[in-house]
Amino acid sequence: MSEFLQQLLNGLSLGAIYALIALGYTMVYGVLRFINFAHSDVFMVGAFIGYYLGKLVPENTVWGGLVVLLAAMLGCALLGMIIERLAYRPLRGAATLNVLITAIGVSLLLEYSGQVFFGATPRTFPAVFPSANYAFGSLVISSNQILVIVVAALLMVALQLIVYRTKIGTAMRAVSLNPKAAQLVGVNNDVVISFTFGLGSALAGAGGILYALNYPSIDPLMGVMPGLKAFVAAVLGGIGNIPGAALGGLLLGTVETFVNGSQWSTYKDAIAFAILIIILLFRPAGLLGKFTVEKV
Image (cartoon, rainbow, N blue to C red; front, side, top):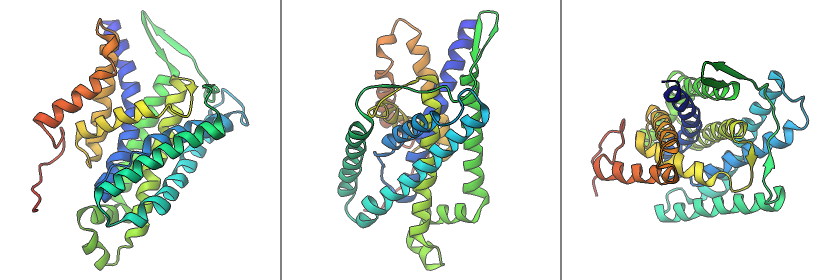
């Protein structure tokens, strides 16, 4: 029983990180109807912001860790808005394929720029938050795992409040539903879309810090696999659906962890893509997504 609980805790901790990244994918898709493949590399930038800032604040302190976390979120939010303004806004209204190719190009630009500026050698992430292990019989709980789950849950709740309880959230939902109608009633689409990119990128920055706390080796290509799995999580929950992205991330992280602890551990990365294929075959709208009919 304790082994099951240990695996479940590990899965929820990993799934919470996937959920934070998946939320960025699903928010951008919900507003602009395209996948921002550069999002996973914004996650990487967040980890490196934390790496360099973590050397400037006292280690193993709560306030130092919070400063690092908030700085990574702000830095990634700014980066996300810059990417939207320079790369995606000029292509608004262009063919979807053009935007997709641009997203892949921005992703590669961030990865290889990271190798130039940060170096390709993996770095050890500093212990910015106090760390301890708590044993309950054979069940061992890390404070970092608790921190990941609690912070991720708070950020998801905050996102829900922003989207459904604020004026900018109402504008985001209006643009998602009908951009032209939203503009006609006075919504500034450019501001809303830029805010959406910033908000999603801030969550990716938080995910980068939380991921680096549990997996403290970081490098410029660290966002590739988590980003792909977070995309699968977004599709699993229902792309464009915020609660669905959170649910998909938690489910995927839990399934992957249980597979990793079994005799099929060598297939732990393949399981995500197997889930993607199954979902696309049997429920393309995802677990919480709604089927829609589009006129051609």
